[in-house]
Image (cartoon, rainbow, N blue to C red; front, side):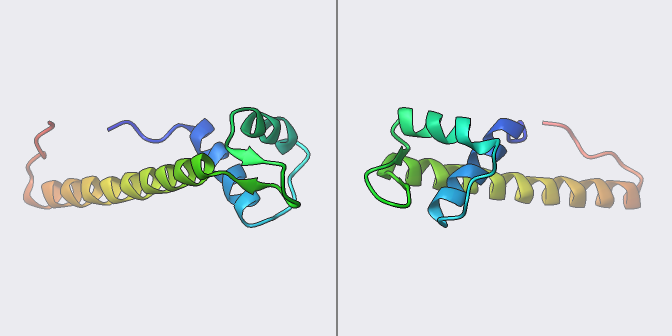
Length: 92
């Protein structure tokens, strides 16, 4: 499993900022406009809100980050166990 891309992490951060009604950084305005254009954020309300698609993408990215963290812990544990026993964990 490849780790989540840095672009996806940045996207998740902007989605969370919109969801929490936090002000955008100056660099976020282009990303926010792309989110509006792609139907992930709506300007019909003040402040802007996530659409249903935006909420689902945000959830999906959050699950991916959590899964990556869990996988990293498992790999770290296996490597630690392998070094204690003097064997290398099998790659799969």
